[in-house]
Image (cartoon, rainbow, N blue to C red; front, side, top):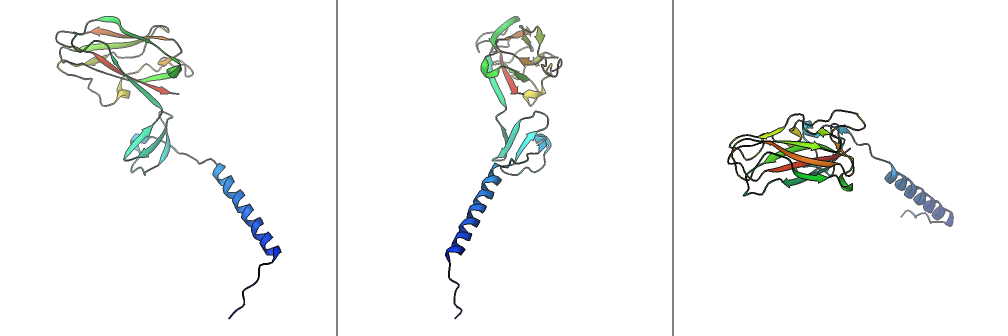
Length: 201
């Protein structure tokens, strides 16, 4: 039988030194930032579970989990402009709110509208009264006989994101006054509501 080599104090010291070096390398590896690709999540084929990207259009950090892209970059609010049993009516400032600290300097990037009861076509405009700007390039219309606007995504609305790159027209600042205006409506339509989506830039 081959005799095993004995561990000497010097050998043990070498082992402890090597273990310490390896622990330090692991610690540094954990501190090294991971490169995250900039991609468009809507056109990315076959995303992998737990894949992380920065969306090239929205600059949002996104991850793929349980067969769905997820993000913490958006805030969506449902606003009831008129009660469900009340007919819609043409009115500027039918619903009014101010930009509070949690949404200050976020961009309004999506809008959709709905009725509680279908009727004649209903049209809305979102206006930043403080800045004197309409947020929608094209007012949003719920077609006659329909309950909702016709596009699939909030971001399909024609948003006025022009102006300065550093301060676009759809950006809301602290305490800006925002109005939801009902600019046209007809008989039968009731319970107008609006979804508004903000994105952190």
